[in-house]
Image 1: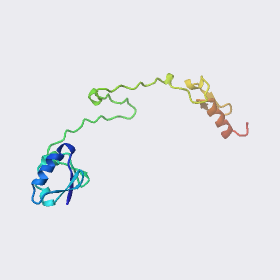
Image 2 (image 1 turned 45 degrees about the horizontal axis):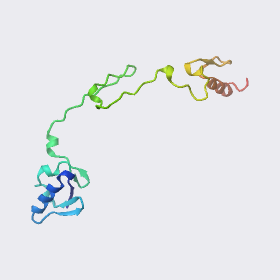
Image 3 (image 1 turned 135 degrees about the horizontal axis):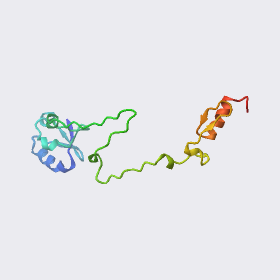
Length: 148
């Protein structure tokens, strides 16, 4: 038996078809029918569209015959800005998210106010630059333990 769970809008029509068969097609759950294989191949196509057959969505052979439109893919190139997205890609209620400017981004937790704005902190021993004093101090403890 093939288990067919018709889409809810076609359940009554499916039941009408099922009771017209000899022998009648029986139900196997509150929303599914047990269809013999010899009847399944002769079922009206419109009753199966949108249904679940043996746990899988039914795919009509007519859908396979129709050539699908190929989506227009946008390609990003490394090192270049992203291509513009067409307005049709967004839903009618879409709201663009604001992108904060680098100056508006919050400073790392525990950083002094001047550290978040790109101030450089150099190691006094090797002159290596660091974005934060915490990074510089950690480097100095690990790389130059003899100086501390």
